[in-house]
Image 1 (cartoon, rainbow, N blue to C red):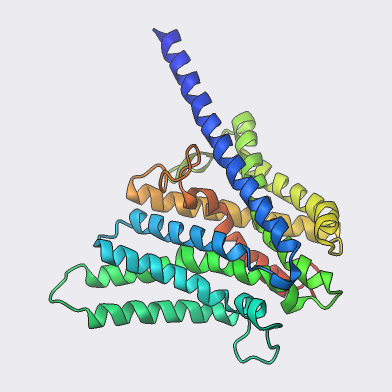
Image 2: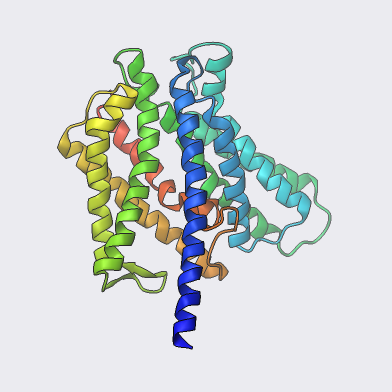
Length: 327
């Protein structure tokens, strides 16, 4: 009987890993194709990333709505998803402007990063206006719904929207050759995906091999301090290899020094761990194992990008501080 249960367990693990590998392969293939297309079309810098980003934003917002146990009608659900999409379009305005009219004006009163704040403000105003003008009597959940909706427009919507800002950091800070601004922003955006995910992978294998002490016993019992340390080391090493060799070859940017690349990788890896634990908090409160079942073997969109969300603003801050040599 014990042998039978062991065989069933092993078969279940194999099926899970198979679907996880298939989902990961599809996502990686799509991401590589879009990044390659974006890099090879400098006249439309960032434009081809917008449709993919909008899909991620809408699905992530819808998953967060479910996790915070937000009771909505179908119309209210569509409204929130539409506002998330519009928010992403707002923050993408400089990219859309350059694709249609030419270089974004350097003296524009709204900077490229300013559209991020404007997008959140505009979507919040539209939400509040809808709730005001469509008032139909007493609703004991109205204030709670408005509060949760605005939270969703901040996390994950604005956090994912900030990836659009990262795509443009080359034009904001870089003053090198024509290839520099175009390639630099894309290199930073790829690093925000690559480093936390490789850190996750290192933490997983390091934790399975040496994990003993719990990192967050109540939020994520399977994570260990040893695994986290191994993940931080893996993320730092990945950053050094990426900025020292891969990014200069692929995106024609200047190599980043060893110390700065290691520090960058460590910072993004720490942010990745924090983002992972933050989503675990939401799922614990909701009593869910995964944010959804969009991606077989991986869970949902939030399960896929949880370690990336907090790494995005950290990467932007390091670019502002010129840690990565952006300007």
